[in-house]
Image (cartoon, rainbow, N blue to C red; front, side, top):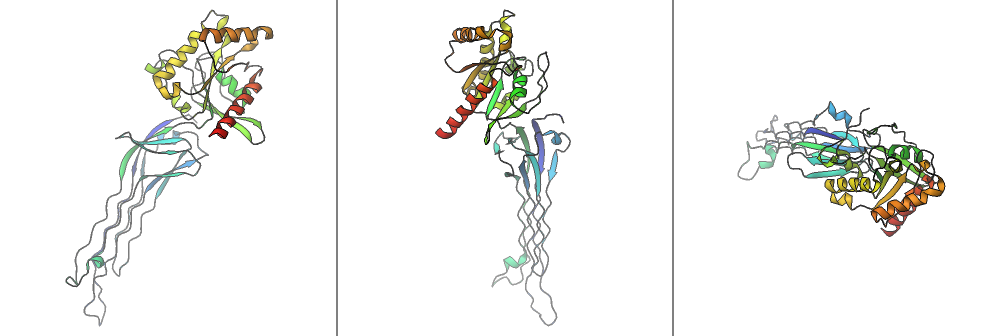
Length: 340
């Protein structure tokens, strides 16, 4: 199924049923009073997070959802039946906005979590409610109120502990394949990754973390170059960013420090919050160098960037260094949990 991470839908709640004007008429009871029942409430429209879904693709074809209206009241003080609610399943991690105002309505982050996006109208009152000592035969009732109608925008943001970023061909997808059961597409050309991927890294019994991979960034992405930054939203919930750097660039006389700065600049152009997120450098494709030269290559990059944070050297292709990196990530996340 094609990955879709945005959708717009129209939701319409049911109108409330009208109240009834009716009078009790029975044999031998000449002065029967009002007995009009209330209208039923209109059904509401709900979104519900479902861990069996991972895309908003279904909303490409189904864009309108309407709940049932309430029935009108009847005589003998019989209330009308309330309308049935409509529940729409969405993936976990769906952010919901009002399209007209841009207001965030809710954020569905747990399986089974529900959010009302259109409230049903209330049923009207029957004439039995308007009886008084001075008005024994009221012919008053109230209509049901209309249900809410709104256009909403759905935006899927993957729930992951760790986010991968880097230029195209930095080896992010290869790394994800190496450390998890995920099988993203891997090939020797840019933009192999066309949509975000998610993998679970298992360190031991009861010890694991999730990793999100997004398409590579290039200079000018914030202005729409390449695949742009539309997928950067999937890193918004991550707790740690792993910035993969392609060590093969040293053989091609590329400036790795400049490439790192390019990605950081695009992050900042998209979101200052994301640019300020904790980030580790990961020098990938270490298999291109003899083992005794790898530390020197890493130190050269550290010096060029004046980098003081963690810097790991790995080969996602062979798996060299990936286990140590994952162990360090797990320890870091557990330390965050203990501190928080």
